[in-house]
Image (cartoon, rainbow, N blue to C red; front, side):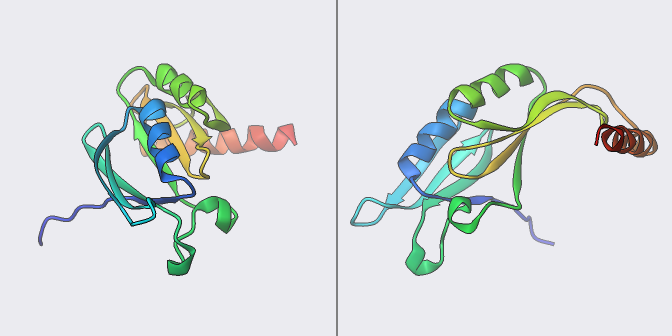
Length: 152
């Protein structure tokens, strides 16, 4: 089989502002940008830690709308770090991200939290904290679910 690459492509309401956010929040590097005659971004190539993603401005005439226009997103982008998760989390919030669920130690062996960017995309910020077997994750998940139900 040929080598396969998966590159997420985000549609946003304001590409210039989004690129500035991703730089400030996560340290993204802009590798290229292509704009139409009106200055809208048709395609921008960005990287986070050597992993590519791209973005474009909304183009309603092509049915290219961001999550804010579609009523939300079902996709969560994950950024995993091997250290400094609290700092990256704080950086994302300082840049304008909002908490979906707070950064905390999770039952699956990671310190994780989810934030939404100003454009409606969600980002899981995570750092492994322990190696946990699949069986142990399942056991902990059931205990977590029971604890959540007891809160309600």
